[in-house]
Amino acid sequence: MKERLQKIIATAGITSRRHAEELMVQGRVSVNNVVVTKLGEKADAEKDVIRIDGKTISVGKTKYYIALNKPAGVVTTLHDPRNRPTVVDLLSDLPERVYPVGRLDYDSRGLLLLTNDGDFAQKIQHPRFQQPKVYRVKIQGHLSRKELDILKKGIKLSDGIFKPENLRLEKINDRSCWLQLTLREGKNRIIRRGFEAAGYRVAMLVRESIGGLKLGNLKEGSWRYLNKKEIVQLLDNASNENS
Image 1 (cartoon, rainbow, N blue to C red):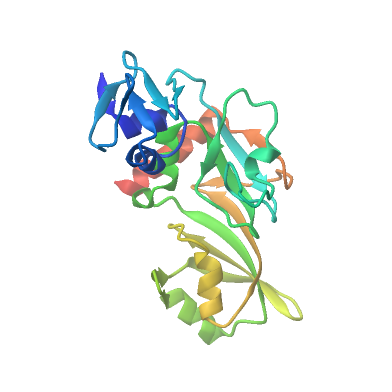
Image 2 (cartoon, one colour; image 1 turned 180 degrees about the horizontal axis):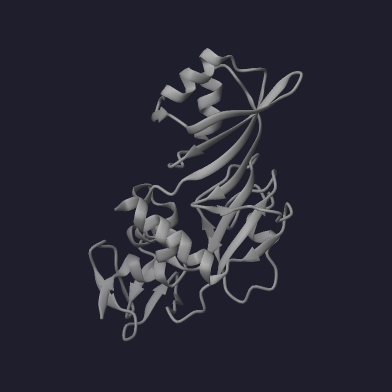
């Protein structure tokens, strides 16, 4: 059966559909030795020979679903031009390559999913599926009740509105405080930028859960496989949020 080429590439676990489209435009994808740059082109994964950078891809791979407790000081990419540690450096003994589902910035910690299932990744990270993500945030200084209300109503940023859900104060220290909040979108560093716009610097940022899947007692820098129930729950949540 013929499908869009970018979907086949994502299903094979090579990368996301969006990045697959970029690879096509760059002339790095071929079907039966013919370079394909048109995004609407289709292919048959069972009959056609599809290559990226000359390497044949396969859609018959075992699919892997991984939860990682990402430490700070690690980048959420497969390769880093500055040779910083990457999240895949924390994985060992995997027979297939996996890639991150969404992002956590260099200084942030917490739950990160990795997979080689492109359809799964699409449903977890795409904005239209609205997967809720819960974060704990430590800021320098103390928020007043008025400032907390302003944040709840939303703060305008250059690329949209930072409007956290379920924002609540967790703990107050001498010179800092902890808050918990929920977001349904993943714009670059939006939590840090949102609090900075309110006049506060984020000292620590930890993602506690994604779509109901919790970090739990997974140690920092460690990872585990998701079980079937967790995978189904994440996909069901995506379907329910999009309905």
